[in-house]
Image (cartoon, rainbow, N blue to C red; front, side, top):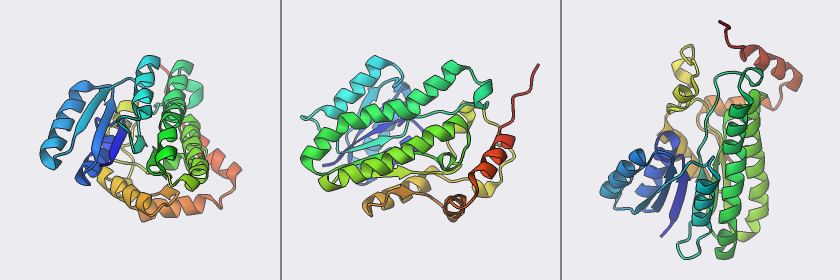
Length: 257
C-alpha cells in the first residue's frame, strides 16, 4: 500500500492530487493550515474510495509545525512513499513594491519548506529503493517573472538535479509545471486576472492527471496543454534580455493613493 503526503491539500491542485491518489488506492496524509477543510475532504475520500486519509494540520511557515511534518515524513514505522510539495502562495505586487517580510515568507514556503521536507523523506525512500517526490513548480519559473518565478525556477532546477541523484536508488522526482490553473491561488494573492482569455486556463484535474502519467513514465517535467508545452519550448530560444524587459513592463507598480 502506497502512502502519499500532500502539502497544501485542502484545495486546488493539492485536493486534486489527493483525489487522484485516493482513486488509485493510496493512503493519504493531508497537510494544510485549515483543519476544518481537511477533515471533510478526508471523510469524503474515505467514503468514495475506501482510502485512509490522515489529517495533519500545519502552518509550514511555523518552525514547530514544519518540524512535525518533517518528522512524519521521516517516520520509518509509518513510511511515506510519495511526497507532493504543493503548498504555496503568490503576491499581487512586483518585488520593489511588496513588503520584504511578505517576500521572505513566500520564499520560505516555496523554497525552504520543500527543501526541508524533501530532505526528511529521502533517507527512507533511498533505503526502500522506491517512491517519489513531486514538486509543484510553475511556467512562471521558465522566464524572469519576478520573485515568484525565481522561486519556481529554483523548484524546477532542484527537481531536475535531485532526479539525477536519486535515479540509482529507484526514486522518481518530477517537477510539475502548470500554467494558469483554476484554483484559489489568484484570488488569495489578490491578482487581477480578468483580462486573461478562457483558452489559457487549465483545470486542476487535467494538471494532476498529466502529472501522474509523467511520473509513471519517469519524465523530469510535466507540462499540461499544447499551449504551455509550446510556450516552454519557445522560451528556450528567446533572448533573455528581451524577455526580461518584456516581463518587467507587464509587472506594473501598484497604483498610489
